[in-house]
Structure formats: structure tokens, C-alpha cells
Image (cartoon, rainbow, N blue to C red; front, side):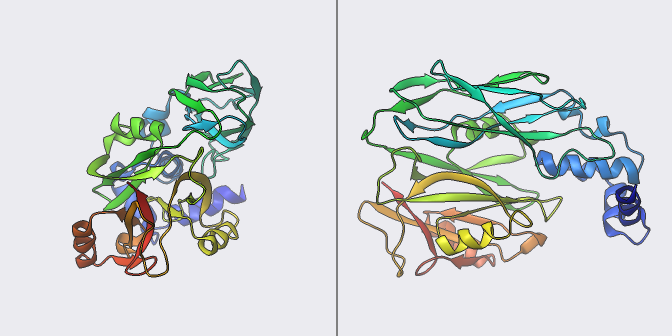
Length: 332
């Protein structure tokens, strides 16, 4: 009950900006889903708004399996393979089986996604599913499948397993923009691209027309570096992602132990710039810019377009990285 009283005090107080903001305009609830669930729970207490009204899109349990990109024979995968949203069901997923698409299966590890599963309402819980596997032979069009005991199943889009030593060609990292937040997001994951292009998050994230080349994680050139992605919801209702291949930045964020930025995992690989910002032969600079906290939450934009860079700097964004502000390099 102490959590209940604390939340009531924080959100229902006439002096609480969050309470006045939320109760005045419930329509401000916006993606991502984890943030939407938290605000919906608060509104249910603060304003008497039914949870189903605000999160109707999550009313039915749903499961999303990710494709693993191009995998390499003999190279172990360990990490997240999908997410499960329980919707209006109070049932946990139960036992989870991962079918790796090569006639092998293993049990999945399930964890509650931070910021979901409000303890009083106990609805709209979301979970991550993780596992490990090593493919033993080349395959094409592999479909990973997640099967839960209580909340259904889902399959990934097709991905390939290539023989060891096979070259890994560049793939596109596509940029999206959320106008209301003035936020940019970039992804090279085929499942994320398909979801955003298909109208996920109410279609609020739109392609900018910008993209740049990166390497898939599997069999990336030894000269390239892994880029890690972090996620934070402490700027609720906004959320933000951060990308780095810098060891010091990575270690500093991991040391927070999830209190600020949560490690999502490796997302792609790129060549890296020298201290003066120059890129290796066969690659071009990916400029990194920081919004300097405009709008109350951090956001970074990455681009290979010098004109886009100039426009962002004129708008008050700050260059970060090597030399004039080069974060990564894009293979051509």
C-alpha cells in the first residue's frame, strides 16, 4: 500500500505538474509502449480513466520475434530474441520454447520489461525473451519461432546463416523522425524497419529519406567495431536511444546498472574514425550530433550528409565524436 499512497500523492496533488498535464489531456499519451503503459496506469489512479480506454491497442496479448540478422556458422548467439506483451491478461507467459529454425529448440529466459507490469493494476505486463544458440550449417530464410505456454506464439521474418568466412556486405541503417518530439531514430534491424514502415506506434515515426551503410554483426570485417544501443525511459513520457562503439562511453553507461540507460545489445558494426575524424579507405564519415537536451530529453542524430549536419548545427545541435564530430564511419 505504501507504493499506492506514494503514487497518489505524487500524481494527484494539485501542485503536481505531471498530474495537471496528464489529467488535462490524456491524448498526450504516446509511444513507446512501455512509457504508454506507465502513464496509463497513473491516469487510472489520478483521473479515473479506464486502462482499456488508453491502451486498447495492447488489449490482446501479442508477441514479436526478432530476426537475428545474418548469422555465421559456428558463431554463438546469446541475447534477446523477442518481446511479449500480455495485454489485458494478468497471466505470465509461462514456459517459453525457442525454435531456432534449424530443427532445434531450447528453453527461453523470460524477464519483465522494466517500467511495465504496474504492481497494483497488474495488467499490461511486457516481457523480454532471451536465449542462446549456435548454427551448425548454412541456411536461408530461417524463421525463429517463440512458443509460450499461456500467451501464444510468433515467428520472425526470414534471416540467413552463412558459412564461416563468407563476406558480409554492407546493409542500410534507416533513419526515422518523430515530429512531436523532434527526435531521430536509426535502425538496421529488418524487423524494426518493417514494423515502423508498417505503422507501429500509431505511425508516428516516419522515414526521413536518409540512411547510411553499416555492417551486420555476423561476420563483420575484423577491422570494424561493434556498435551498442542503449535505451532510457527516465525522461518519461519521452524515451531515447543512444548508440556508441566507444569503450569509455559503453563502460560508463553499463556501470549505471540500468538506473539511467539500459543496454539493449549490439545492433551493427562499422569502421571507426581516427582521432582527427578521418575514416578508413572505402568509408565515409557518419556525423554525430546531440540536441543538447532541447525539449527536456536527449537525442542524437547520425548522418553522412554534410548539408544535414550544417542544418542541425544551425538549429543548436552540438557535434560529438572525433575531429569535427564523427561518431562512426560508413562502408561504401
